[in-house]
Length: 261
Image (cartoon, rainbow, N blue to C red; front, side, top):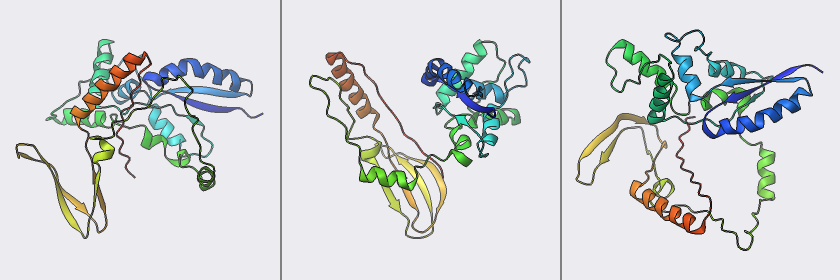
């Protein structure tokens, strides 16, 4: 049997816990078949260190695993197990930078208002790390996750039906249902070529230009939405109180995703 290699990505937060329990199982199974499993660190911390090796000691430096995997993802023979990774916001990015600095890694702060050429370069490197930086790289080539047409048609013909909860089950699913991204979404279709300006108008009438010079084509769709922070706070307080009263585990999923094609 020809030896092969599977690359397993090391990421952040909960997936790191999954790695501790699941990776040894993968290695035990694949080892019997002559398949090696290697780890590549594409965590937020790993990506930060890869971007700023200049002042790190040789022992502290890490390779740019994401760039390596990006090249492999375009090859048909590549085998990559990608775990979920955080879409790093600026607060998360700054927290990771502070944690690494506290551990002795000589990396720069995130410049909020870069003025010098050096600060602008630092800001640009960090900006390439934040957000869903991993997904556009590893979803290239053979990483297309769209379901084949045959699978879609089978699902339509045989729709999955959830069984009712058992009698006495305290499980329940709650959604906001109002004042959230879904309920507030509005779309507009351009009738002709145009140049748009996006403004925020406060309750007192104050206008703030968010973006100008936005060129659109005929029949191009402009879509916008917003989430009410007050409604979210009220929803969280209500559902937390209900979970506490029922003595059940509480799990919240907050997600707003923009995928650029």
